[in-house]
Image (cartoon, rainbow, N blue to C red):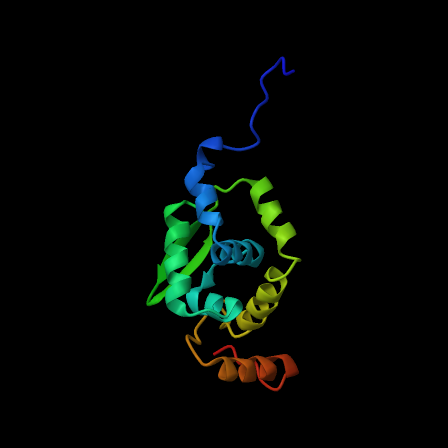
Length: 151
């Protein structure tokens, strides 16, 4: 039996039914894990490559996550880059990181890391949407060291 009041580790008003409902979809959970592990804002086209799903589905799920307060989108020209909302509690982030070493999250992370090799010198996605074959060719070139391909 509890006799005292425990102080919450984080603002519990952030955690509500909508928060968990947004995470109940496997694709949205994969997006949140990918964004948490990335630690930097990620372009929609990078997420499309990482999760291997169409852009319209990624955008639809990011909108749901944004409304639930889990992610934030920031416009930079024609690009929208997403990141995990900074107000999310550290225990939640640690849970997402723990998930990242299991499948399908690990494969998503590997593809996202590869795709982020194609960023420019400022660390910004400038490639856009290319076919998976074209992206794999560019990634292979960068990894082999034959070019910097951060164009």
